[in-house]
Every structure is written in structure tokens, then in C-alpha cells.
Image 1: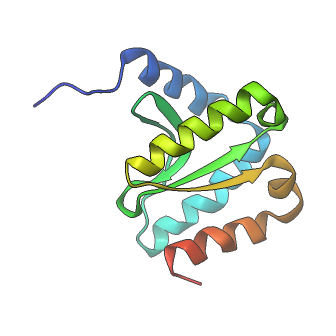
Image 2: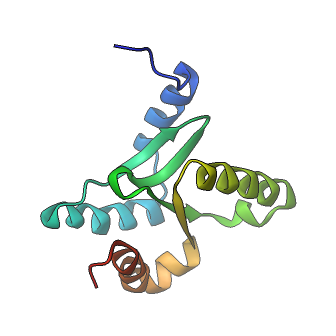
Length: 120
């Protein structure tokens, strides 16, 4: 078996993030887990390259990001653009939601994910 191309630090950070999810991520995760019932394997805090995706459905090449307020800071915006461009170059589609959307319209966010998966 070939060694992972993902660094041990990235894997360790992802493991920590799984244990310390925000309330918005926890709510989203509770809903996304229900997709398993219809055959979609959703993973949380997934290391992909040097990045960690909040949620991923690897078979569908779909990344779901839940962005907190710090994603409005210029430095973070630039990082997010770089990350999203890299993920797209690797064949992933990225859906982004901010925590306000998740708090106010979680059902709508889930509907958007389902539409992207072709199940709504």
C-alpha cells in the first residue's frame, strides 16, 4: 500500500476539527448523515491534499463548506479562493454556506445539496 500523500499534521488537524465542530457544522452534519439512508457516504472534516473540507461526498466529488464570520476577512477570502480553485482543479464542486444561512434556513441548505446530488 502506498503511503498517504496527506501530511500527518493535516490528518491530525482534521481529527481535532471533527471533535470541535461549530454548532452550525453540528446541525448540518446531523442532516447530512441522513443521506446515508439513500446511498450517499458523507464524511466530515476530510483532509484533501493540504486542505480540510468541512464535509465531502467523495464519490460525487462534492465539497460542502460552512463558513464562519472569519471567512469575511480579506486574508481568509484570498485563502478560500486559492483553496476552492485547487479543489476545482482536482475535480471537486464546492458548495459554500455561511453560518447565518445554516442557522436561518438549514432546510434550504440541505435542499441545495440534494439538488446538486440530483435527488430533489
